[in-house]
Amino acid sequence: MAISREEVLHVAKLARFELAEGELEKLTADLGKILEAIGVVSELDLADVAPTSHPLDLVDVSAEDEPHACLPLDAVFANAPAEEAHQFRVPAWEQ
Amino acid sequence: MGAVVDTLRLTAEDAKGLLERGELSGAELLGAYREAIDARDGELHCFVRTLDEPEGEGVPIALKDVISTKGVETTAGSRILAGYVPPFDSTVAARVKAAGLPLLGKTNTDEFAMGSSTENSAYGPSRNPWDPERVPGGSGGGSSAAVTAGMAPWALGSDTGGSIKQPSALCGNVGLRPTYGTVSRYGVVAFASSLDQVGPVAKSVRDVALLYSILAGRDPCDSTTVELPQPVRLPEDDSLAGMRIGVPTELNDAEGIEPGVKDAVEKAIALAEGLGAEVGECSLPRAVRYGMPCYYLIAPAEASSNLARYDGVRYGPRVDGASYQELVGRTRDKGFGDETKRRIMLGTYALSAGYYDAFYGQAQRVRTLLIEEHRQAFECFDVLACATSPTVAFRIGERAADPLSMYLSDVLTIPSCLAGLPGLSIPCGLSEGLPVGLQLIGPQFGENALFRVGHALEQAIGFDTVPTRWRA
Image (cartoon, rainbow over all chains, first blue to last red; front, side, top):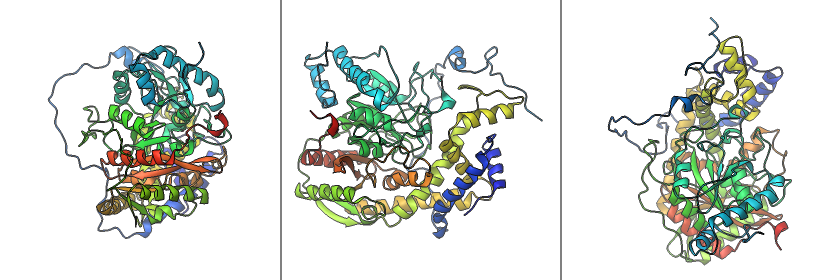
């Protein structure tokens, strides 16, 4: 099951990668081989089988709505590459 | 002062005894491990960083670098988290801290725990203590090799499709992937959230059980955790009378299992029979053919979503751009390594419009079948047994250029991970001078049965965990 160059470009956009020179060809070839190997799942007829998203039978639990201490803002922003007055600074969105 | 203890042989339980009887101080014990790190980590590169003055008077521990540690850099083997210092402790780090275990350091891992060799680490590969030309397995190769090399008495790894069990097999020690939901994932760098589990690595089954008892149990910060239905029992019994051990045909006859591995595993299973276990064949018909493909749809799909958070905005290095989109695209392109990118791309594709049902939806249905066939096997057996890894440790570089051959390293560990089941790897012999791992798989919350079988076999096998090149 091959994947086309155009599809890889589209997926890269969805995954927010700006692929460097030469990466596109290698990714197209690698993904093609991997998809061929894992595509065997399609040979099973599973129309009547329910999907599993999670291996435990869990039910939602509720907690009391009590305020807890939060991390101090200085600690939260300590790792920020660019910060201004406790806000993350980024360039403008390109329209 | 020279080394007061031989850290290559000392178990965590023995170390705990020395401390409790006052025969050794916490500082002396810590000093012995730090000397071992100074002596051997230059060759093996198990640690990405060590701590100068760790706190705690108990038995020291090393943590895989996907586990957030407050005030200690945590990078998950990735450039995109270089310099990231967590402002909080993960629950597992908090629990080992509360138990008084000093943190020796953070151990190397494939980037975001994606790999079977540690070669995908942005900080260079770790090496196998038995043969430094070979990989220690992965992704938790740093933790596993550190334990075998006596640089830590025990350590934590994380396992999504085999990242604790497979390195333990390749390094000749004991590793537990716990039942999904028994150990908190809060503060653990997420790879695939429906599969990720933190677990212990050590030199003996009893050490692994002891460390598991410190970690396990419900955490209000992780809504997928549960209380253990029964407390952890440290195994003592040498007899396996009354235990029923199933040998899944497909997993034991899978293509690619080396003859030396098959031989060691068969001998261990025969030993179990000699200890009184009832041994019989069983079947997991779809586990080998569909397990790996199912995993490589589900895990990358979840990863593509989890790793969307790395964008150079709130933490980690940033590559600037003229617009927000350019900044994010460049940061992600420079920050992630090849394998992580492949998996994000694969997962994004499997979740994209037009392919979701055929790939991700179909894989979720295969997962249901795998859970069901394991459930049927456990109607007749208490524990299932097969090899952990189809091969012994392979050479550095041997599989790095071929993603699929790397993925097949985990063909035997993946099926039970998808089913959410616990698995224990114990060393069961040598093949070509390198350790072979026996994988014991239990039903949900079946850790105590795994400890019992693992401990009894460990005594009967008498495997020497010290690499041959270091034996006096």
